[in-house]
Image (cartoon, rainbow, N blue to C red; front, side, top):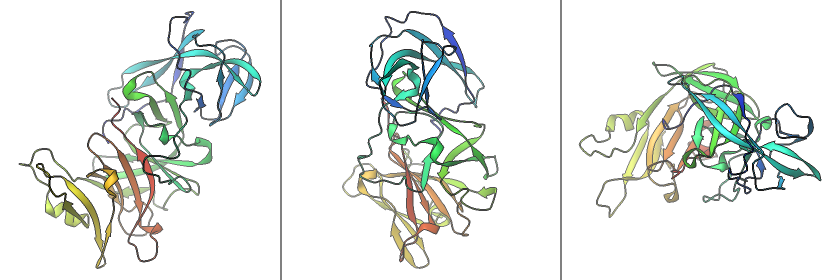
Length: 318
């Protein structure tokens, strides 16, 4: 999951433009601001706040033009460079109250009937910080406790409670930005309504590639054995691709994926997340990004080895 951009706290810089020739996406009606979106009397952060629109609410556009622009000031964690993401002040209505909001806090409603017809949002959420284009990854930040897993160079992941925020960008390949209050070395985020998964503040983990483009560099069978997994090749293909991924443990075998997930690409994380002394998994399925699944052994149903508890959508955006 190295294709995500990591973001730090944000600052605003106003651009005093009429914005009349700037296109406004009136389909972006879903409020994604952590803590709700301020509805203001005039287009500007210094104008009077007349209402707060809760996360997940919808607004109605009163105009298709931009009344002013503002920029979201972000910093990438890897190269420390700064970048401005522009947004528009748009005129909207919420519960018969009219005013102005910044449209990088307005996104598209998530499709709860996702293309896998599965819902894993009751107890756990899996997120990766940075850029993406799947609004199915939207979850009300106030409804969860968020824990970041920060990796060092030795396979140690320090677990810290963090805050998350969402922003919409105009870039096609980065329509939705997931930002964390701390992001240096942040590998992934797990939301849990009850608190941290285990008592441990540090967990050990590793990643294993399950597919290589270059067949001269095949999958190392010993890596699969250490991960207690088995790969089954898809039949009838000119190019070798793994089709089925099984977990093998305690003389049992359990299929981890469905055909519609696409082929297993990488075990992004393998380690004991929930403190039961058995390895849990975060597995990426698909070529240029499709879905990533979180599996926990402590949630296994009777007769099963492990259970998938959360799904992150990672489609190829362009």
